[in-house]
Length: 258
Image 1 (cartoon, one colour):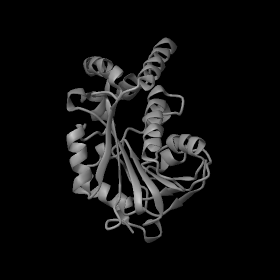
Image 2: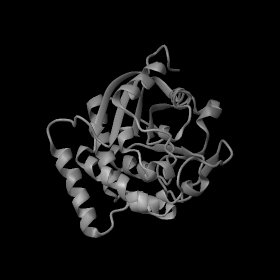
Image 3: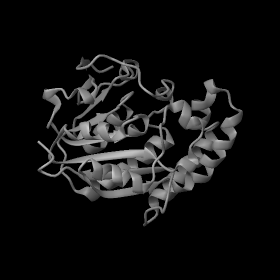
């Protein structure tokens, strides 16, 4: 466990705690999102010296990013139990509510990542605007969210998702916060039929088993199949027209940054 610095008091979050037990760096979905993120960072061409992972949970994303980017990644969350699951890294871990706007954290980072975070927040615009204050001038903001309310299921409800997004309303959110979206990329197209099946299957599952049933492949063969879908889609020379998720990024202008 990494040392944790307290900048805010721990607090309950709209998230199923058990998810952090399953969301490891070997899970197909975690790897899929990570690969899409790396592709988009390469496209952005933005030199990063440090990053803040908002809502970092168990630190799995931080571990993957530090390995592949070779830079320190700081993480913050209000879920102390999840933070205690994080392995040591080069960056720091904070119990920190970004709405508190701790002065030592503002204008400090080259990039801020909110990876599957804002769908848990009632007022996503206020939360995103608060996150932007932690960026240097010209800094990069990267957001990943679940896509399409058609795919909303009991899994989303138990996970504390307030909504799923379209490319249009995610772009509008960026623009409301003063950030021009450079890319809004759907991904997970090959998994869309499976999420529609999940929506039906979870109606018959007890609430206590919803997260595991909805996120963890039932056996090794299913896990191998999902890794195969991931690899096929990532190898395609074009982006998907739609998907189970959306990844968007943009830059903070000098007039909006610190």
